Length: 271
Image 1 (cartoon, helix red, strand yellow):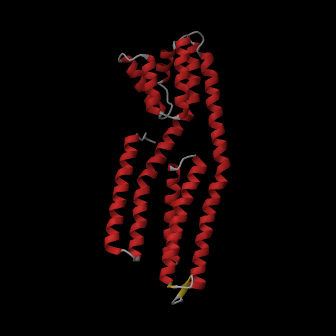
Image 2: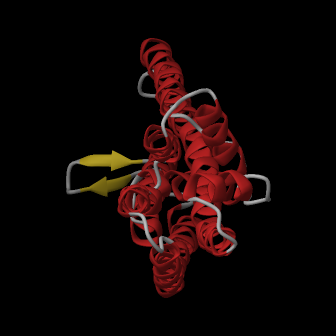
Image 3: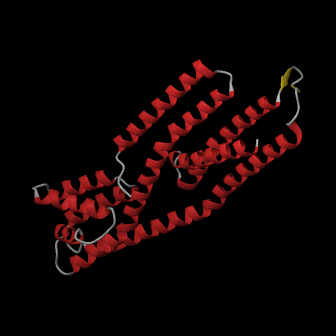
């Protein structure tokens, strides 16, 4: 998975949101109050959500791969230092091995050192480029270990174990929250099944249904109401699933996208 920079995410948000707003404005002036307006708004939301959701997922996978290779990196540093290498030499030697997406960043760091940048500056630049939580925690510890001198490998060995434990706890948390994400999906599909069953068995063929004792609702109006309810349920249900599963609202965009498309297809096929 490639690395996604912050400016790329901001650009994707800007472009997709601008296109969505343009579609909604066009639909407002051309199709207000019709089923076509609902369709335009729905696909405008899809356009607004799709690019950021994809970029957030790719960036999440990249960061996850970086963090998972950190324990292997620290073990290699300990092994290199046990042979008598200094910390900069150990990092340069380990950069020749494969640590997934972290390998490219390590090679950049060693290249910066060879160009005259100090070890601490290159390490801080590495932490800024990678910018994962675990990397931000470990870079200051590596710098302090380098300043202290002595048996630096005694610092890296427990640091690698700490990161490994952190990754295991994070994996356990994801496994524990997975059933709750599944509940959100199941609840959404039960909701879909219920409204389709209601519409097919009760509302079809009704010419006018009193709503709150005043207005009349046609089957087409009921169908639009169900479409609105399904879209709202899908979007916010996906946001909640992402917050529960990965701890961020942005992570829920992919769930919202999946639920929105599933709901739209189901209503088009069965209503």
